[in-house]
Length: 126
Image 1 (tube, rainbow, N blue to C red):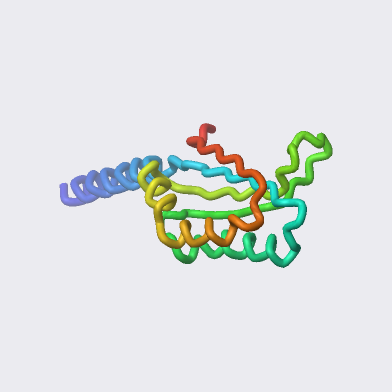
Image 2 (image 1 turned 90 degrees about the horizontal axis):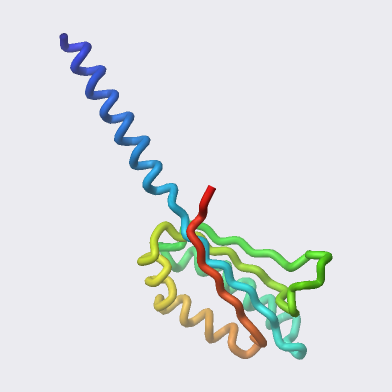
C-alpha cells in the first residue's frame, strides 16, 4: 500500500513538473531593427551593439538576447541593418525592461547613431 501511495505522489509531482514546464514555455519575443545614420562611425555602431548585448547581464527579466546583421538577398530591409532579438516570459517582464534604468541608458548610447527603429513584439506560436 505504501508503494502505491508513493507511486501516486511521484506521479502527481511529475505531472505538476510537466505542467509547470509547459506554463513557462510561453515566450514573448521583442524584435528590434535598427537603421543607423549614414555618418555613424563603425566604432559608434559597435558601441551600440556592445551596449545592447550587455543588457542581459543588467536586466534580470531578459531570458535571452541575440543579434545579427541583415544578410537577405531580397533587398527589402529598407536600410535596416541590425536585428536584436530579446526573449521574455511575460508582458510584465517586457514592460519592466522598457523602463529599466539600464535600458534607458542604452537608449542614450543609441540616440546619436540611430536613423530609424522598428519594433515588433509577438508571442511564440508553434
